[in-house]
Amino acid sequence: MAKQLIFDIKERLGDIVFQMEEKSGKRIYLSVHKSDLRRVASVLHNDLGARFSTASGMDNIKNFEILYHFSFDDSGKIISIRTFVDKDLPSVDSLVPVIGSGAEWVEREMHELLGLDFSGHPGLKRLLLPEDWPQGKYPLRRDFKNE
Amino acid sequence: MNDKEKLRKTIIPIGPFHPLQEEPEFFKLYVEGETVVDIDINIGYNHRGIEKLSEAKSYDQAAFLVERICGICSNAHPLAFSQAVEDLLGVEVPERALYIRTIIAELERIHSHLLWLGLAGHFLGYNTVFMWAWKYREPVLDIFEMVTGNRNHYGMNKPGGVRKDIAEEDIPKISKMIAELIPAVDMFKGAVLDDPVLHARLKGVGVLKKEDAVEYAALGPVARASGVNIDVRKDEPYAAYNLVDWKVIIENDGDCFAKTKVRILELYESIEIIRQCLKKIPKGPIDARLKEVPPGEGIGRIEAPRGECIHYIRSDGSNSPVRHKIRAPSFMSVPTAKASVVGQQVADATIILASVDPCYCCTERMAVVDRKSGKEVISSQGLVRLSQEKTRKISLSF
Figure 1 (tube, each protein chain N blue to C red):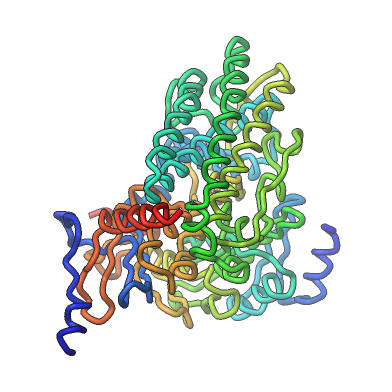
Figure 2 (figure 1 turned 60 degrees about the vertical axis):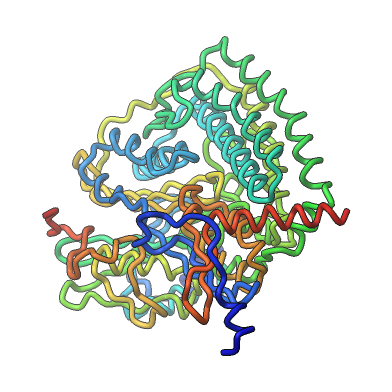
């Protein structure tokens, strides 16, 4: 079952995944270019039936990194899509049109806490930060100062 | 707009406003007459920047930090976090610790589901259910206090194992307590699941269709009540869940009744899991005594009372996490309220929203707004009273 899943992914995606790390039997990370994000997410979610669990964005100083964590509940594996986003162009395609409403809130969260833009998102308004939180201040960025 | 229409729209608010009504409400329901036509869900009241704070904590401190995310399922977050660190390290936790983790986690599920049952009873006007559910919750909290020192915020889980052991002499006390819970759960099952008035209140109400549960990636009892067969304890077994026999509870109707039934039946499974753990728990160490966390990343997830709770950790080899992402289950399940409350009667709104089991303090901030005028027409307390009144009327007809 495990090997079949990896095989299916390799067959459908090929070189689109430029790095595949099997950290353990249950944790696999697929690195892809951000332009291929929707394609890969669609394969995992729509073709292979994975459930979207959550996404985690982070500031690597030299770039942003977003991980989208998909759960294959039948086998207990989490396959995470890893993509890097340039600081000068912190924008990526929203996954909502491809995998559904489950991605709505977490993209809003990454938008307000990291300053990432998700194009095609149905409504990128604030989720957690109060309305009077100043624009342009992103708490999860490395250069954020608590003033 | 003629006088008749004006009369229909000018509803006098029942109940007090919150004095600081500047903030957006958590659940903002738009109504036309008696029907809910739309809902806004606003969160962030309790946003304390815990992920950011974690970056300044040691791995040991971070476990205490995340315990305070929630008072109801406080054990869930330290456990998921500990497992994320253990995933990064690829370490095994001593077997005794796995059993202790399971016992504490299932006691937490019991107290959380009983708390919910009480709330549901209150919203439906069954204050006896409310009082009895919370009465039978007390012995569970007494066990927590005996074993961990605290009724909530147990400080039990750490990367590598657990912080405190369960004393031999306490094991029969826990066994006795859970055995005494069974007749209580039997009573709730009968009182709630066989009551014709509650059938009228809960069946067919607030249905979340299976395809909507999947669309929203819903979790926990909310998903399982709509026929979605997911439970981290079975899908990616952790702690001692694959060392004991138990079953996942699935219902298919997706209504408030199904959600209630799932939570009640899960109580039996939790009692059974604890009973087996108490019999099988081996002697031995409870802590793998981890030293450093090397560079890497890890994901830990567990089945909290409300569903999958997942933590992601990135380490650069220093004492603190570089990134600590936390996703509690309600984050996925609360948005399903949009699919289950729209089109329903406003008197049913409270129980439908409660059946999604969001944080209790957040549900205090409900507001009902007339769609056309934009005016608030019913307060939170008013909504609860509407629900209780509906039960009273139905019971009169039986």
